[in-house]
Length: 113
Length: 114
Image (cartoon, rainbow over the protein chains, first blue to last red):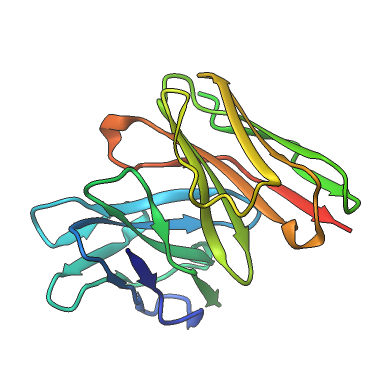
């Protein structure tokens, strides 16, 4: 079975500050890794994904994430956040051998002016 | 291009009533997923289809829930009878097999069961 742990339920940060949203996963098989973002009253949309190759993945809106196999982590980072980045961020895994996407519980990023 | 379309956006009903949620996936997508989002449990996968065939329904909470996909452009999620604990936001998402789990989500149907 697979599970995803997002260690922080809420992350408050001031505008232009850097941010890291943490994600750890557990799986007995190899997985693909994803970050999705949900703006208020909207569905989720893909931010970035790791399938293979370079462990540093760049996504939309200046976000990036690094896959660390030994620590089973896939933390999301942005060097300088904007007010518009305020949203809920979901880490997800998908085992190689299924088509399922299993989500973490989400981290609410609140950016203050 | 139209995205995933869900209806209704909001539904308020009384316990015991039948609820039907509808989804129109993006044209050409061959996967369709139903998720439920609550504060307590986060996003849970209920069921997914590939080429209109249900592949995994292990997330469907109990027999009161059923889902169908009669054709490539339409799916329903039905709850009968509904209970207050079914109150949640239900999301439909679709994807292309070759795009490796890039799901496109609808805006969700917010269900409140009184």
